[in-house]
Image 1: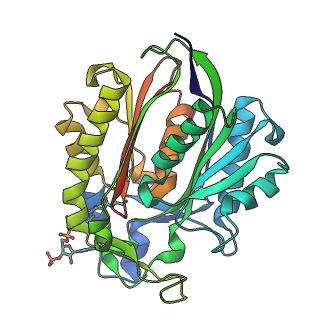
Image 2: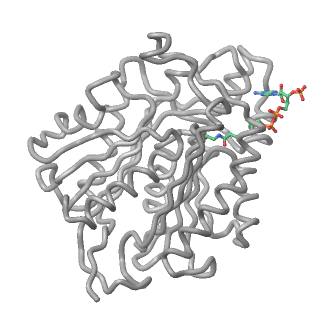
Length: 325
Ligand code: UT7
């Protein structure tokens, strides 16, 4: 049986120029490179320059993905952009990116699922493609989390960074089995009872301010391992594959200890996991496509590889997707 699949045809990323090493935080906070490294795996992160917006980061990642695909913006039908740090309350950062790319047709919108944003975005793009509403979709995760940090809170401000990652998905025909190229399965979940574990303490309808990030790190940690392992297993089962078939796990890059424990719980080994948290910190919705693009640039991802992507964040919202390259 022939089915429509959303196949990856281009990938790209962008990191702002400014690199901030852990040691820089020692000047202003009661913290240390050793603490940050051992508790999170993070060694450095990138911060956007003054005036550099989320859409600016997204634009660079999009250009790289278009170049990689051999396409121009006019070849796209849609942009789905995941972010929790939009340029403005509205219009969507996706529509700003659409204008910056010179794409005058199709449609563009944002998705907000915090660190699970990219998984929600590719799941949505997949649905648009499979249902015939779009043939080519640019999926982006882009964030400037440095704009919502409380710089006096050592338990959060050392963990996050800025960046963007992009993936272009295109409709192609497959046989409907797990050997097909493209997205084979997705799983999305959320549980709003855990709103208060990870949130920003401001907003349009509440305080009319942007607010800063607040997190009960240990609590989020506890949820993360079990929920990521479970959503990963669901996505694999839906795709009709097992952990043994996975070539690369591309997890949300929040904490190396979470990644290691999740992978172990799933019966996988770290040699099949893409890890970039040491260089990027937690870039929320950008973290998975950033890691994907970096691994692709390193030549680690080859045609036919089976990728398992998974992420969790504020909401709590979490999910996973399998993609055959
Ligand atoms: O991306 C969305 C999802 N987010 C996550 O997945 C994050 C999940 N959570 C985590 O990654 C970890 O919980 C953290 C990295 C945030 C914290 O690691 P932890 O091992 O859970 O540390 P903790 O919060 O239990 O804190 C241990 C100690 C505390 O001191 P006391 O109470 O034991 O005296 C903290 O005050 O470490 C202290 N501490 C720090 N010390 C030095 C907290 N932040 C720092 C710091 N430098 N930056």
